[in-house]
Length: 203
Image (tube, rainbow, N blue to C red):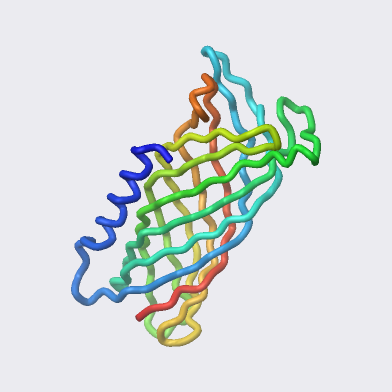
């Protein structure tokens, strides 16, 4: 794993420990999962851009987070994993036995703005986050990867199940800066529409 990627993980952990939140905030953990729909990747090489160079199958997304809930806001440090099969390369179907896929590890600092209504069990929210992601392309012939700046934003609702347990339903748009796996001289765009469901437990 590249040094800058390891350094960012360490910095994110420092953020979590030293987050400047009000004393009234409460810690929580969350786990979400769902479907990830990667948009077709553009490929840029030598000043030439090819649209829809890589086409993907739908895949899965899993995110875990620890954070603090301050009432109308939340902040958290999150780790995510996404995996999608590669369906076509330059409009040519990829043979199934090639086992071609892309996987993404993300390390994000997220912020949430919630609208709490007294007596309501449903809490709408908006969210946004920044961080780093490691993108790996794999097939039977080998693998290549690159790390890049990542960001996401989305919206959803929390549904109160008990005093300390919330169900979470939401949508996130996740994207990275263009990646250049193993300095191949080709830059790939990465963006995904993710639909997630999960649980959040407060302490």
